[in-house]
Amino acid sequence: MPRLPRATASFLQTLEEAFRSAGLTHSSVLLAVSGGGDSTALLLGTALVRERLGLTVEVATLDHGLRPESVDEVRAVERLAAQKDLVCHVRPLRLKPGPGVEARAREARYATLEVIRAERALAAIATAHTASDQAETLLMRLARGTSLRGATGIMPTRGKVVRPLLGLPREVVEAFLQEQGRAFARDPMNADPRYLRARIRHGVLPAFSEAVGYPVTERLASFARWAAEDDALLQAWAQTAWDRLRCAGGGLDAVGLRALELPLRRRVLARLLAEAGAGVDAATLGRVLGAVARGRSTTLTQGLQLRASGGLVRCVRAVDPVPAFEPLYLAGPGASGTLKGTGWHFEAREGAGGSGVLVLRLPEETCWPLTVRLRRPGDRLHGKGGSRKLQDVFVDLRVPAERRNLQPVVVDARGEVLWVPGVWMAPLEKVASRHSLWALPPGSSGGGGASL
Image (cartoon, rainbow, N blue to C red; front, side, top):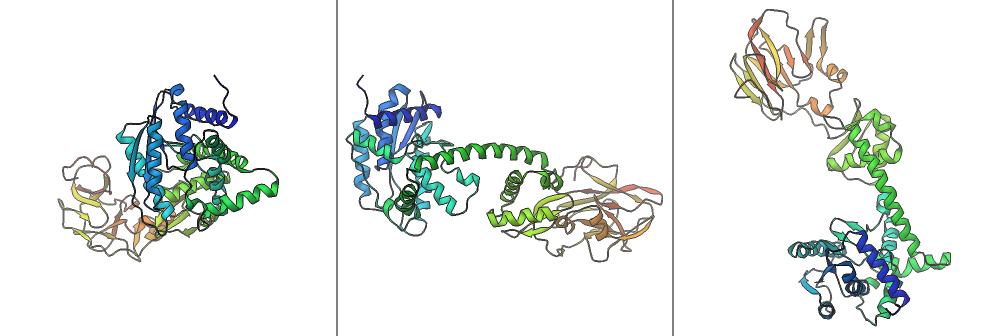
């Protein structure tokens, strides 16, 4: 076998190793080919190594509809695929120029590629991102103030997408194309200074390399790879911490959270915010970390607050005034109903109650009708040791503030509080009757009665 030119040998070795690492030997792949240098090299190289890998290869080329030249570029990809005996799929995207075109184009590309992959039952999609793309992405994200996770840049594999050229700088890719005698299209958007990536590519990276005296692309790409490895380990530890600190009723154990090392605490809190639907950025995380340390609250986006109180750290809706829901009236034994707006269901009936049912035993002298309502200013609870404000009991029992405004309160015809289900009940000082008041909390399923 004749010895391969230097760039070709390096290119094919890297490409083959990447496909093997992705588990694609004796498998199938859809190549995303635009007609530019990187993707043209991906097509040519994959055609050369497919037999050794036992790889079934098909090609997809997408016309974004943003430049007149794109039609010719798509046809050139079709011709090259045909020369290499590869099935080629052509799809138009019909994008419109304007704000956010890069992001819109990226989203449309991946969506369309996935449709083709699924239709053809192929194992993966291969894109032609290189180490140069990785270095550019890293610098763009660092300039915007990224975290370690953002510094991981472009991942070698993500879902069904693999990037087998990620270990090669663009110079090696273009040297391979030169040795193959293959011309390729150049997208003018890649040189358009209106786009940050173009300014990084043609201005920042060359200046950086000149300043230090050697090419920095591969070193930056290596840093992104190492950052990805470190982040994967920290994310695994953060998952373990999340599982340990997550409380059954929602939120995180505050003491355990404060004991975490800062990198883990930050990741766990970022997940808490994200799962609640709040925005996550550096400034928000800084405020949240401070609130957790001091046991305070802080405002989030989407009308949310983070609260660190009562031994819990949780994201909640900002507390509104007590809603004016219509009270529920229970005229006597056998009466039942649901307190609208809360999901709490009540029945006055015989029996001890089933699983998930809260029960208040009623004395013979119960002063009917009973009223189920929400708390009111001045509500007091009367027991053997005197009376206390309901608000004070909520505080002592660490009832979350967001729960208090939807907590039912049961009073008799004289207005005396008999029961705050799940929180407090009046002591039974007289002869008990055969009847009890049953309460079924929202989302529960109780036994012992058909209506419950």
